Every structure is written in C-alpha cells, then in structure tokens.
View 1 (cartoon, one colour):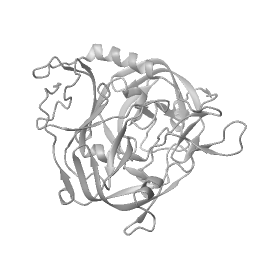
View 2 (cartoon, helix red, strand yellow):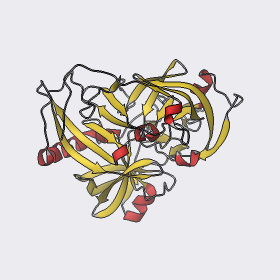
View 3 (cartoon, one colour):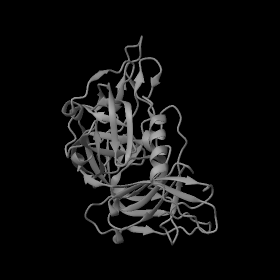
View 4 (cartoon, helix red, strand yellow):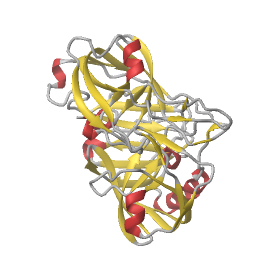
Length: 372
C-alpha cells in the first residue's frame, strides 16, 4: 500500500546556483565506527586466504511500517532510528521538537524527496548513539514535514554506512557492520555455503553516497537505488512508461497515496510485471508499484524564473521488501552487493514465491570470507 511507502529519500540538497550539495558528516561517522570496531572486534580467517571480516556491530532491528529500525539515544533520551540507505543521516523535525533540540537555519542547504522540498535546520547534539556506536558533538540536519509514526525519530543514512560493509539480515531481525581486511577478490557472503548472487555498485559522484545497481525489468536495464528506507520497491512513473507501463495498461490498479520528507502526497499504482532480474536471480509474473516520485522535487535557480527538476533522482527504489526476502551484504569495500534468497514473497505480498520465481544460486570457486 502506498501508505507504507512513507520514506525519506534525500534526492539532493542544492544551492540556488550549483544544484545538488550535501551536508557532509561522513568523516565523523568513520571515526566513530573505527573506535567501536577496536572495542568490539570479532574476526575469523577466510578459508585459504588472509581475508578477515572484523565485526564492529551486531544490531537487533525491529520493523516499523516495513522498514528496519534500531534503538539508540540522543543526549541520553531514547530514540528509534530508521536505517535508510536511500537518504542522509538526520534528525526528523517532530523528534527534534520532542527532544528539545536547539536548531539554527542551514543556510544554502535544501533537501528534496518524495513530496517535494523540506525546510532544513541544523542542530548540535552532545551525544548521538546508534546501537553500540556513539558519536559526541555531532552537527546534524533537522528536516521532515510529517510525523512518520512508529516513533521514528532519526534517519541513519548511507553517509553512515559508506565506510564499512553492512549486512542486512532482516529475515533474522539483524543488521551487522563489518570492516574487511585483505579481502580483495574474495566472496564476502560468508554465510552462503552454496554461493551467492552478486551485482556491481555504480560509482557515485556529486550526488553523494548512494547504492545504485543495474537491474533488468521486462528485459530492459534499469538503474535502481537500494533503499532500505522504502518499505516497498517502486518505479518512477517516467521509467514505467519507458518500459511500456502506463495508467491505461491492463491490470493497473490504484494503490492510494504516499509521501516522504516533503509535505505533499503522490499517487501510487500497482502494475503487472513480466520479469525482474538482479544478478542471477529472476522473478517472473510479479507486480510492481509505480508513482510520479519526483514531480515536486523542483527548484528555481538564481536569476531564473523557470523551475528546474533536481537531478540525479533514481529510476527505481529497490526497497525493504527485497531485503526482507534476502540476506544482503553491501560490500562498500569491493563496490559490490552480495545476496541470497531466504524465502517469502519479494514484491507480491500474498502470492507464494514458488509460483513465480525462477531463481538460481551463483557458484563461486573463490575463497569466501567467514565471520563470527
């Protein structure tokens, strides 16, 4: 349902002249994770190699509206953070009000997402804790025009994860963080005794850290953003039209409205899909949601009266429904994503997956990493 797709993608902040700009806290997270890893390191040597996966965190997660949440604190007050690989780390405005955080205007920064633009402030936090990871004196954006419910107070985004490897084991309600050592060319899906599928991550540039993969939809290549903050996978309407899916296509039904960081709502539809393929896994005769995700993500440059769409928006959000049916390792160290199918539906909430899946497991003869 579209109401389940209340997400917070950071399509891009921008200034009036140069387009997308980001508030960068990546070096702060890297330092915090390194300190945590020294305290919590757990290692195991890979078979026939020197590869070691140093585990620096093992978070129990719960599901709120279908997205992974982890407990933590801000200045000693309990919060729940949404793990969102499609966004940047921030405090949501309703939580900032509840926590009594002092804010200032973020000059020159603008944030856009589903539902349009959101006002941006910044706050200085004495102590921000996510699971076992703690950071002090942290300056974070405050944004969001709606209450996400389920007491979602903050977003832990891809800027947090990009310096490490992160395993989404949502079938077992866990997210684990690793720092690999000497693992170049090694299959890092340490749990996969029968091999794992893998797909390359695109390099990122000015748009900031993001996990963009190439998938095949109805046999056509499509760029998809791996987005743990979207409870359901969804195509942008323009991409759906390129693939031959329109509002007039047979089997298309309305699926309500949904929103994200911005104040506006967008309409969602569900359409039949012939096939979806990623790596060496194929799902056949399924359905997919689609919406005009970025119609309100516009800004007007300085000295211009013509609105311009924010650039770099993804064609598809590959959401938490995919993660819930798989065990996934985002190996930033290798710019790859490894995954194995764990069971249950991917895109269709009711139909049994055996009736529509044609999935094979990849066999890899390289030494695989192990972790405890």
